[in-house]
Length: 473
Ligand code: SF4
Image (cartoon, rainbow, N blue to C red; front, side, top):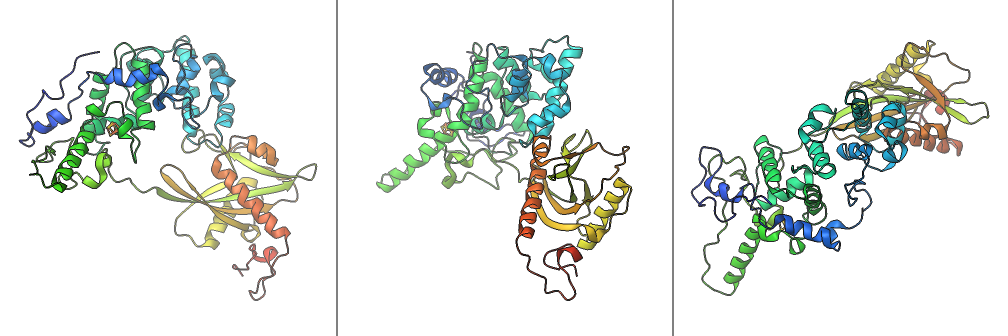
């Protein structure tokens, strides 16, 4: 273990922030590490194999958790690097060569419904780069991994280099951010450059030189299972003696109990630098809140609300050769949101369009694409389907259209194909499109039960205006 600054030795406390950026209290509280004992405390439970920190892989965890680093295939390492959410990739393509030769379509099919589709694409791009430009040899140092492999950032590079190749380099992911901010009372916005830089410094100093991979996994597991966002299990925490946030809570509790027993209350030794410009302390406007305890840390800047988007989409249906319905799906462009995935023909809409106008836009889009007239009134409204992407609040305005004859699609436009329901689900389609099909099937079931005739004057029901309620008549 590398020696680091002592917890008690650095800084004198108290005097407020220096204009150099790190306050005198902060020098002590936010110091990169008191390294003595961290590694042992984190690694001991791993070795003993009896701690909740290292239980076998729970559902939903990255598959590599709990697996020994040695002997993992390069594909598994790439999966690790891109937070591949399941073990199917290395099972299907055990070698980099096999993964590099797979089509994006195949990779997307394996990813379908799991979200983070761009990771599948990046995974394959990285495999191709290793095979075609790096003679099949995975880079082993974090710096090279980050520089040479598309989609590999600082965290993923550090994770591969330390876990798979034993480089003594730290990792900082969401769990590590939480743990380190609590250990060192870092209360400034945890996404700010000053905090991120300090966390990386800490991670690089703390990492156990002889077992970096185990240490990094243990630190991430600590955040995932003990130092959790709400109600952390401080009583069971192997590093609580090193934790500034925990100490602060303990001191406050001791102070409160002395007060109850009428003893002369000592001045509590709890400090916020907060004065001046410390880039790591909580802002003076949001000081420590005793009711939150250690969950005062970390703090995040208010999240931007997701962008609202509206898209008209049409379930185009025909009877297949055995009478079963078939649906037309088209492929999205190879870059951007949901790149390369398949969807029902869709067109983005402006936010403030009237329903009639939305319907016309979709009809025009279909018409240009099919090369034959499509009456807006012939589109049957199905439902509005909401899907939340990480940064987009997407509303699909779903219509359906039954085609009697075959249609000739313009081959100059997106690739397209007719699929049965089973084929649809086996295709590289997003969860949002599965929801759209579900809404369509629900509507069809509703229609096959007795239809309540609309009371709208002159409306003949769904065949007339396209809605069961007659709202468009
Ligand atoms: Fe997290 Fe509590 Fe452990 Fe501190 S003592 S690291 S707050 S679980």
